[in-house]
Image: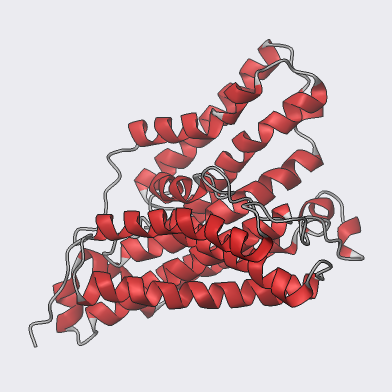
Length: 347
């Protein structure tokens, strides 16, 4: 659906209203907003939102075509672990950013290969989509630490190379926009371009209409001579590639791999699913929701900086509390009519 859709407008209005209320509450409590809402906070928010937005856009494409991909978390772990391992193999103890770019590209290619197998299981062999997605997540939880131990002898990697602070000479001096977009990770700008491109493709091209039809009315699409399953294959593979890229971006921003606990992905794939539900299956809406979750995640640093005494554990819960609120308020989001239903051509 487009931004002219009433449901999308209501969500955006509610999000803006929530932000306004939060700002009013901060003023009432006497918090120094000028010290909280800094350029650095915006930069960190964009970087935190980037992997969530990428995974969310991939997931909504799969669902728009009629296929659940709740394995986004697992594919993100694959992307992060493979990127870290490949950076180490390419550059050793002193990898360069060129090594990081190559590693990210190879990691995305590996994610595509994994997703092809996943898509075959779902579409050709009609595996239960929820169970298969959970299996990908569980495999990822084991794959990440295993890869780290295999490569570094430890679940956590040493410091590798980061792309969190890259300056573009000339453009970084532009007022406001310069420090935010051109004195930070180039992956932020890449994500913005991908979100816009995903929106244009989905709502302004015939291929995008085919993808939507595959999820809403596959019989009509089949009657028109377009293979429903081919459209679904493409959408699912795209979703895995985007989730793999999301994990690679997460690794590139942190500069190292963490395989302990829930791994460094730590629920971002699940938040990505909530983001596209909040955004009403709209790539730009999903990116905006990811920005909201990223901002909530970065509040901890800002509170510490300005000396606001809020327990860290409480601040860490903000993004997940937002997830609960979103799921509660917008649980009525209309999913594609044929979502989760295997399709057999009548030919």
